[in-house]
Image 1 (cartoon, rainbow, N blue to C red):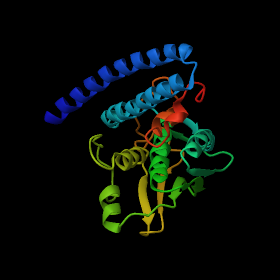
Image 2 (cartoon, rainbow, N blue to C red; image 1 turned 135 degrees about the horizontal axis):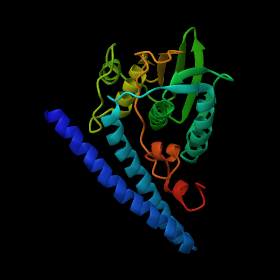
Image 3 (cartoon, one colour; image 1 turned 45 degrees about the horizontal axis):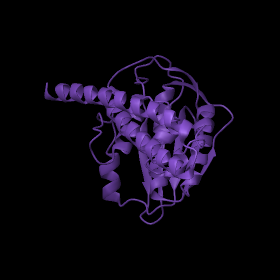
Length: 257
């Protein structure tokens, strides 16, 4: 009962925050019409950056509350999704001094929740970009599984820290948006909802490699349970998902059109 009450309060707070953020976004769009000089554009960039970062927090609040719901999966080309999102993340991360490369097949068809798969990739790539300056995202088919791999050149994780973040086998618990390591918790839950698993391969000082593997072609099966991801509030979802890493200049008027 306490958990249910807490989830309702979180949902109510997130909804109220989203209304205020929508008003701030509208005001920012109106201010663009009179932001002629560099100082005005820099102020607007800072405002848009703050809006995107708040949208990211609100989205995580909402997402964590929805990851116990079930909806029907849809036919999805994982390769096309990965290329599209990868291209957008690549351009944005370049502005933050991070090199992202994407490697995927021509097509890889399955049934899955596209919004959640995009959120999974945003979380994993953002974690890699926060750790290092080079990130590699790959997608491949391994027998009857789709396997996403995200590698970075950061310092890696000590075994105890990796075990604490990624946990053991079985279905991941519902994530709490207030806890440390929320990106990994959300990723574990998304993969678990698709009947797969998420696990790290790491050596301290030699970067981190995270593999997300889930079965292909499980139309309508119990292993394909999923929930809707959060709304980006009018901004590009990649901008919102990576907003904590991007410099303010990315959010200046004209930069994100």
